[in-house]
Structure formats: structure tokens, C-alpha cells
Length: 263
Image (tube, rainbow, N blue to C red; front, side):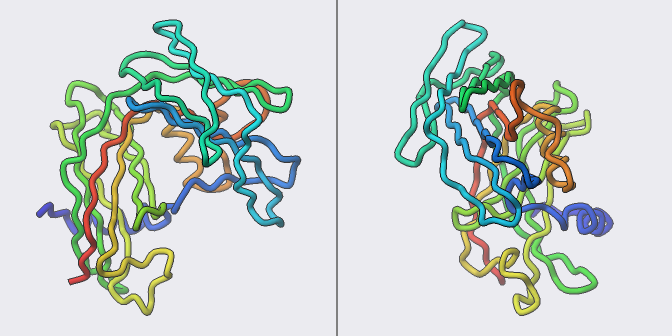
């Protein structure tokens, strides 16, 4: 079992305790603007478009479907039109190839939005496990994740997302810091042992299925996510054109699941 020094655990307690459950955009009280979330993997492309709502109104998660969404392979000069599926997401089966550059363009309500990125290699998750760690207030289940990191590439960045029974639970960003032996380990505080003292949004129950998804991301995407995690900012715009929120990510995530066993 992977072991982490108690001092490192204390550091994670201070740094990671505020990990968000999902991407939280700081919606100001303005006219609705698009939120474009595009993901390109080796299996295809999927783009969701929603609109912001005023902070004093219920969140409207209805998908925009009257947009024109195109994916362009800049390396091969191939354009693919994405079409809405049954859930209102724009999809296509044209997968990305690592090392190539891609452009996602969206036309909606008289505005055009574009974002360009390079397809990064897929990630292999090698281990996912829990360990109870004694904190001053209680025992806490620390989720430990290991995944492959290219030892010949410096300063690589990753987006680690955790799902509880298929629903978004926590996430964080990670970097190899320019030094790696080929495997990167990260840790995340999850549930307290005393569930009577734990918020339900953080609580893990015996038998919960915890799935970890790790994606390679570039520095801009990492900075964008870090700004969201810090709060008070939506990060630097990821799309050119009119005002909008969101991102375009191109990489195939690695996944691994584990059943949470309280004992």
C-alpha cells in the first residue's frame, strides 16, 4: 500500500480540503452568456452548451441545441460538424490524434466562439486506494491515486476528477513539477470516519463506488481550473470571440474504480 508522510498529509489537509465537487463558474447578475464545455478524446468529441443564470435564480441546466458546432483538425485540414444527441449534447465520432492541433468553433445567437488546443497523450491510471489518516478532529479517508507520467517531458499538468456512484464528487489539478520517475502520486482528503459529523456532500458510505478519471491538460487549462478552484474568478477566457465561459480539452482520460470499504 502506498504510504504518505504525515507532514505531507497535513499539507494536503490545508491545501486540498477546499476541492470543489464540480466546476463552479462565478455567474454575475448579467444577461445570459454561453457556457461551452468541449472534450475531445480518441473516441470522439462531445460539447455541451448552456447559458448562465442570475445568482438569485435557480440554475438552468437546459442545453442549447440551436448552435452550429464544428471541429477542425488543423493538421489534416478536416472539418466535422457536430450534431445534438438525445441529451442535447453536440457529438461526433471523429476522435483526436495525440500531437495534432484542433479548433472548436461555435456559432450561436449571432456570435462566433473559437478555441484551439493540441491533443495530449492518454493517461494510464495504475493504482487507486484509500487509507485512513489520523487528523486532530477525526480519521479521514485519504484517496491515493497513481498514474503514468512521461519522465522525458517536464512540467506536465493533469486534471484529476473523482466520481461517487457516477456523480461528480471532487477534483483537483496536479503537476509533475518538472521531476518524475515515470509515475505520479497524488492524494485527496475525502470523508471523515464519523459520518454523524460529516456533510452528506463529502460523506463516503460503505459500498460506494469511487471512480477516478485523470486527463492530461495544458498550462492554460490548468491555470483556468486553478482560478475556478480558488474562487472569485472564472479564469482567463478559453474562447476567442464574444463573451463566454467554458473550455476545450483534448486528451483521453485514464480511469479506475474502487469500492469504498469503511473498515
